[in-house]
Amino acid sequence: MDMNVDAIRVEVIKPEIGAVLHVDRAALCEPAVAARIMELLELHDALIFPRLKLTDEEQVAFTGALGALVNFTHTAPGGSKANDVYEITLDKKKNPEPEYVLGTFFWHMDGTTINQPVPKASVLSCRKTSPKGGQTQFCNTYAAYEALPEDEKKALEGLRVMHSVVAAVREVAAPEDLEPFKRGAAHEQPLVWTRKNGRKSLMIGYSADYIVGWSKAEGRALLARLQEWAAQPRFCYSHEWQEGDLAIWDNGGALHRVIPYPADSGRTMHRTSIAGLEATS
Ligand code: OGA
Ligand code: MN
Figure 1 (cartoon, rainbow, N blue to C red):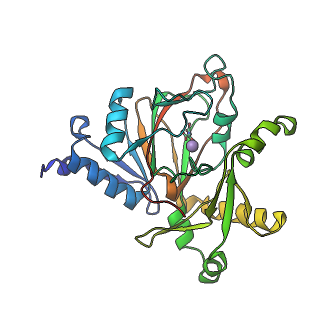
Figure 2 (cartoon, protein in one colour):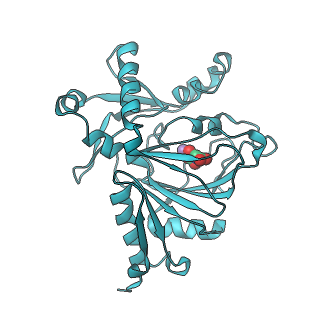
Figure 3 (tube, helix red, strand yellow):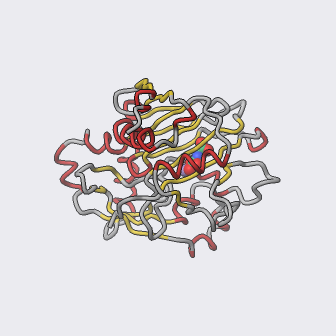
């Protein structure tokens, strides 16, 4: 096996989340390097590759080296089957239906509302920064679950949560515009997702609508409280982008959001996704 894995230099950002990886860009797609990056993702939840400056083709190749590339946004506004790179922009000329992108201002996981394994990881590269706002924040929902008091963990056992598009856009769309979204995708998830390897994370965020079988008030209050818990500074990292930076996060074990930025800022991000390996069931 190639020994290029030694070429990965790791700087831990915080004990509970985040590491900066310095990797020779020519070695990114080597199997041993890609495997090591996925191990580091498991350890640190969110990885930052400063100034990597990948082209779309290189980002697609890197994503495919880390796992199976998945395109779950081909039906979303601005998405297409032909292009596996999803452009995140509020520029009105490029994106006349901004709800999906405005939703990213709120803590969420990607791809929770469709009936397929949630993406294992999201890969986001910065093409143009915003002069104001635009920092992407990540919080570790494995660590947040793990740190809950034992009696609270017990109380969450077996709970199911409905994730839906309508819940996600409620944050950003006027009530009179919600009607078409009510026919959007919805999918039930476990509130606590236990992997085959025993790791557990919280399936929460803006698409989490209600706890199945609970009153709306009690269910939403629990979801809000868990989100506040997970978003404590100790579990969070906020990334100040530079053009060409690339971030990868464990989408099933992290929430993410972006600090609001002006629509005319030109901020542009390119996202690819790695297919989920395990169904949440
Ligand atoms: C995403 C997302 C946040 C950002 O690409 O899934 O939520 O910083 N992006 O643009
Ligand atoms: Mn997202």
